[in-house]
Image (tube, rainbow, N blue to C red; front, side, top):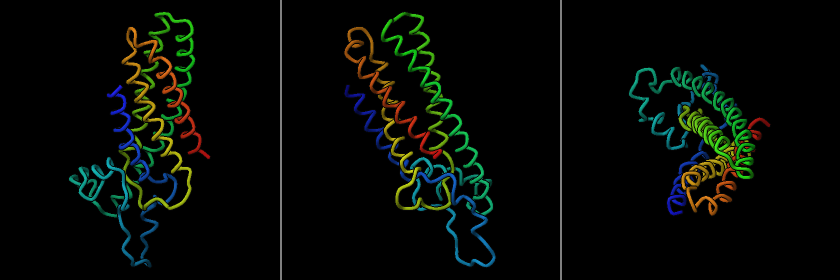
Length: 214
């Protein structure tokens, strides 16, 4: 169980940085903010970015080594178009993954109640597909270029979305770790914890996808 605790703490550190991720629907139009009448210098990057964005898209990030991604107003506008595409794909793939989680829930319930090798194989294959979808969805958000400005203070659906991401990513990793340890005598002991982690991951993930649409 020590490995599970370590993974959860690492996940907590990593996903809490989603607090710095910003709204995908407002403030992305850089060129609209830079007008001939406005002589004030507009910052090209927000002051707060998550670690993955800072390493890749920050002022001295890896992408700044390429001419295509030099830190200029015009090229930042192109980055914002890439950001929109990645985050739209993030949402579409998220709902597809949610569908896979629902199917996995039905198969998992049957496996727990009836057993059977055929159902077990299906459960494992669905689990692999859900994992691919889930972590691809997460990567699209974590590695997207940053927004123009810092997130506004106060309540927003985006902030709730990120806090729920902290919960479902931790639960998702716990589900996978527990699944890998469910062998022999450990199966009976870890079974309820595995199921609880899976339901927590599904519930938090579903809530995070729904709240972003309303």
